[in-house]
Image (cartoon, rainbow, N blue to C red; front, side, top):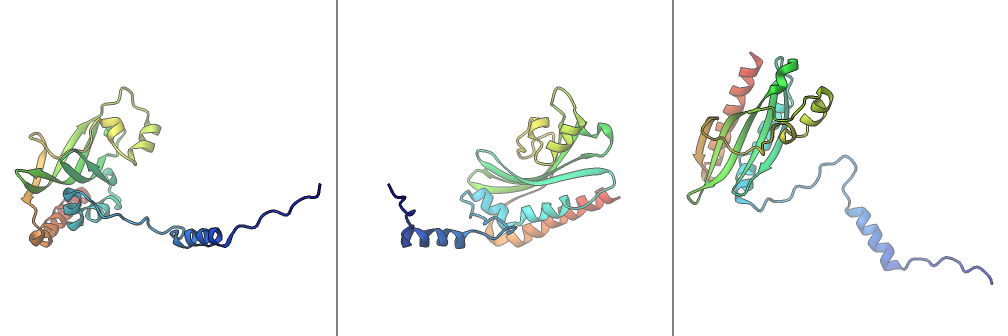
Length: 186
């Protein structure tokens, strides 16, 4: 029996493959951001919370190691947090979180910024593993989901969110970030 030549793909399949290749994002470009469906996430987007905290996490500080930002979510709240700890060997024992959260309270969206302190919760401390994992998140070692501040935490700011006040709230958030940065640079 003679060998049959391989079948050529039909033109429609070929065009579909070319279309998928053209639709792909170029290498190294940012992932497309989807519009958030949750009102709490939309409030944080309008306040530019992620970018404000990102500027803080990208800096070098003398006394602390700072990581993040990260978006955290609960049933009725969303937040953007950075986390940091002292550079000393025993600095892992207490992690601090600076965050801004949006949550529901009596039918309104309330935005708050605050500082939280978390004790180390893992049974042992391995510096290499800690250093590797802490850059991506704090939940593994501190058993916390990054929820909004409670009574024992330091509340820096709280207000009801309205779209009309978003620029004023954004400026307040930037002021809080600047004050935190100046405190760390002293």
